[in-house]
Image (cartoon, rainbow, N blue to C red; front, side, top):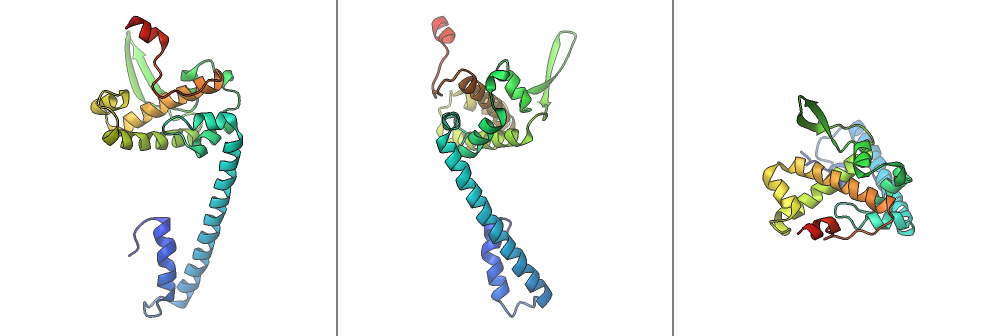
Length: 198
């Protein structure tokens, strides 16, 4: 029995092929050799493409700007910049988050507003990247962030998946602000209106 995971398979298949006592038929042995060679080639191509994406990211100012947001790395940043184009085509950050499918569907009647799950419309790839990045941040926040932070408070009220999607939504809005207003990300930014009222 081989545990799940591509790295494990890549390490174990050569051992299985070299073991002449395991009773593996010749046809199956040849098939595994071909599959192993294909896996190595695909892995080589993935590494090559990742290098090209990282080079493009380093040369692109907008992509580098987005990488400063927690939960967004070079792959996500470059994918957003390449897909979104001119962020000013969106009226605001909520519209961009909705375009990615990160805004909850609403069911409102009689003055009562009910928020449902995310719409899952829009760009599946960008939504997935943003949610995976947000999940990494929530795992880190469980142990390291301050208890009174926005994310920790949210995680105290809702489950981790809801918190990750909420953070992905927030990050999509931040992305819009950085791209549309040509500004830089500041981790502990507080709007002027909030500080003036305090």
